Length: 234
Image (cartoon, rainbow, N blue to C red; front, side, top):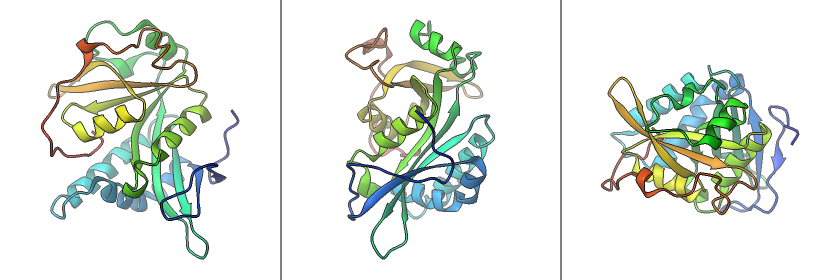
């Protein structure tokens, strides 16, 4: 697939936002993403539904993660903007990340042997880490997150998406699972230690019906956490 250049919007066919009109997807370079970081942070806070006392910490946490990710080689972002006739375009979603290095350091601390297919795709440079997906609450159940993640992976000709989620973030974990991500195990990182869940998203024919070693494994399923956790990404 040929990637559109940064700033070149493409209409998302077959998708109508909750407000009517149309949604356009466009890629942002690291410089464009930094230039829109405040708008992106506004969207993030709105998407989490953080209470007034937690808004500042939620916002600062997002901005800190974004600042770290934009420095990664190959960083890329896809944003979704809804347009209604006579009104300015409104930011309704974004997804961003960077290519996983071929040396396998992304999987450092993985509990047990890494599935062979994941190891092979990592070594061949076909894994892209999607570190954050943010969708406006009005569009959350309309499939926009799936469109964002699939377009970002396709633009990078990636066969597999990867992400690491904090084990306590039940809301976010459930959201990623609903978007097609598969839990493949735990990753332990320092300092802490912090235990993260490793999720992957096969793109194309490599699906849950043809998992090639990524079938659901009860041994890798995380324990259910109590409700009411912070819905932040990490």
